[in-house]
Length: 481
Ligand code: SAH
Image (cartoon, rainbow, N blue to C red):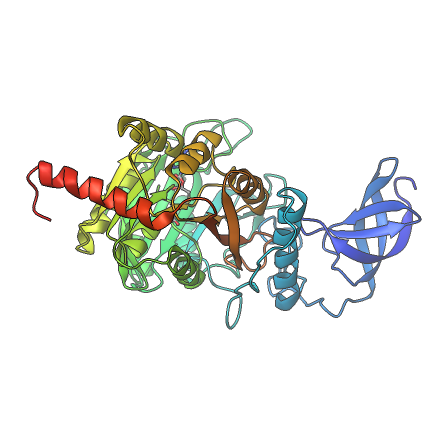
């Protein structure tokens, strides 16, 4: 087949990125916005020898799973990939994605997978965080919106079906303010202009709203005026800040924060635990599903109140404090110092004194502490929740040496999850449960929580030993137990 050829095909599968896959006499064609089960007419826009990319021209027979996207810019916007697929279809897609990764990358056969936990009710308006790029349209008016998939051109859009309606008040207030005071949006082309992004975070349970402007500079002219306009327009506003990012980079946030109003954080609840979240800290974006995810992590940890638990990649201590409700002692490790500060504050805020936090790379802190203990440091349960790239091997190696009874692996990328599970299962662990959770409806992303059991260790004696050694140490130190 050649470029610009028209073709008709049935979409028989979908790629991990959510593109439809059609087959034409052994030639594979990938079509964005086509849904499994559709019969479509397409035009080939790029052709290689055995495969190519097609543009969807017409849906001839729609799939039974095809729906009209709720969002008017679903097709061009790079944020969602699966809005034309029914929610049921999305959930099946995600289960299959996890299963395929575990099979192909992890070489697991009998996978103890539970049905995915989807959202109840409408799978929209679930995000507590939004980041809008700021730019100009052809007429020179300031706009906010979303990037067109895989590009940096902005589609003007002051609302997002995944976000909260309050985002609209915030973006309108900021862009009106910029127009009035002639404050320029950032231009990637020449690295000029000031305002790059608007970040909005909301506490679902508390109703608190935080606004942060990411700027190519360290001050914003007329900042007090912006604060008072936001106060007037945005119910629940508790924090306004600037984030300095002067780099030529795609990374949205810089390191430095300038506080304009409020305490520099907002608060929200997950279950019974209260959290302080600053603009730089990671916090799960779908609070309704987060509670289910952490609930599963807690269930899989199987805590009785006697356990020593390590929570690696702990962020602001969300999972750590969830577990601390039922564990004897929790230790958290996180690379971002501000997040660790939040984690400590969060422990105090919830009157939990059985959680301790360390700053550093998990793959350095844990091996180092293990070495210092002369190989005596033990854990009953280890929880990991790494970013997409998964766990570093140095960390996995130490985890195996520590031989916890259970490992709970929370993953936002099932490909690296599969790789890491294989490592652990070749060294004494077995996958006991795999639980996908849909945290990101409309997109191809899926979160998975996984329980591993130790096949070799005699957990009870070892645990007892570890507790005894620790208690002994504390008695030696003169502490009361
Ligand atoms: N468990 C937390 C955070 C998970 S996101 C929650 O559920 O909210 C992953 C976290 O890992 C982020 O906070 C990130 O800053 C942190 N991180 C990334 N690389 C790390 C590393 N090498 N060591 C420790 N933490 C790391």
